[in-house]
Length: 565
Image 1 (cartoon, rainbow, N blue to C red):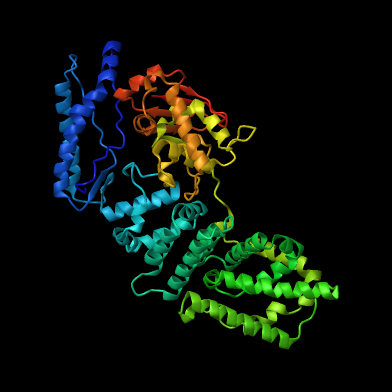
Image 2 (cartoon, helix red, strand yellow; image 1 turned 120 degrees about the vertical axis):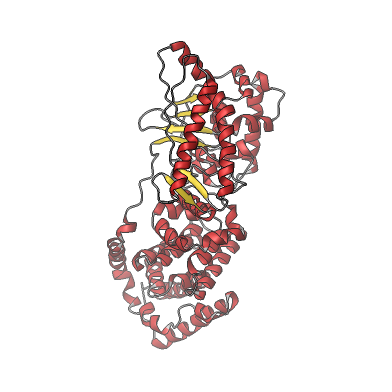
């Protein structure tokens, strides 16, 4: 283990058999302090010694089982000696085997731990049991993460993970554009002798386009997500029909946003022209030059629509010379656009428009007559061609969770004030449903920690409180309005004002000592969920609360929450 790391015990389970109720209650009341003071402190020193013998590895033991008899006088000193003797004996027996493949024993490098933590988060949105509570993924921006990206197993594990819609969604929603581009470039495309420079340049161009659109506030709803999903599906070698369908949807959404009335009035022509422009073209090239592609379609259809109005007809035949002139002009525009973004010749979009001229305008005169049928058939074919891998979206629901350790479990303390908070922030509908659960979760996280746009692994309990299934990916890049922040601050002051023992205290004290508490969340099917929070010295102030803390009913949750604090 690394010297800077803590030794972690995931769970301690004790089963005590006694024929005396009095002794049973005595053990129940005193065993925790005994373990903390006598046993765990010794184990800390013992594991430090083992650490010095294995400085380059972390050692994981699945479980240690010990059976101990304590004398009638409840001699804790004898109890301590038996526990320590049996634990050290079991550990040494495992180490003597010197076989990392021994059942229940794992020896892993720090780099392997980072990889396991990364993909566990990608698939579940939570931390591994050995991950520290303050762990986040800003490390991706650090060059030290390059070792993880360069690991031989990373590319294989990443491709397997993002084939699953939920993991793919979390990858896009939780990581920044720079982080996504870094992971794809260093972890997937740059692999020894298999460096694909053209894809790297295109992905960098796509990233810059997204960042520019965000800075200008021109990014339409879902555009960022769709763009990166198309990139990922392209890298996975997904069925061309699926990727083209998503690309068509992306371009359609741009036109709906920019040319709403024109798009819906001439939807058939737009769909046909979009289909023509993207057919047989590389998706990454198209995305890298999306603005130019949109401009070409827009100008071409503007001419078509104008001539239709002038002639009073639905469509018109084009002369070949006219088609040729338009094509040459469009190709020149694309080349100019490419020169602005990159000088790499591999990025010249639509390499030769000669191959698409006939398809672009061929039989456009009959477009309005048969387009509806063709478009319908095309969509049906796309659906039929979907890979089995992507055919079914994963069923997102709250799974049974037994003993999930969560941050900020102390938010249960402010439960009577949450409804008013959400109402004031316009997050609650009249039927007591939350209209924007992700924003609500981020608001609760901000109230507890003061942090914005935090990673999902630190927000599991906030998701639970806002009716978001624990394993459902959420958007990280949510901006809270100043109004919401002010409402949150006002709510904390209201909590303090109604808590006699804390009336003169600060909101920071409330956050640090009570709201930011680690807890254990249990969700078991149809049963009511329970939250367990370890009691600390300051919790004597909870006895002065003027509201109930053991049983909680939130207006937007169907079930009562039981709290054991």
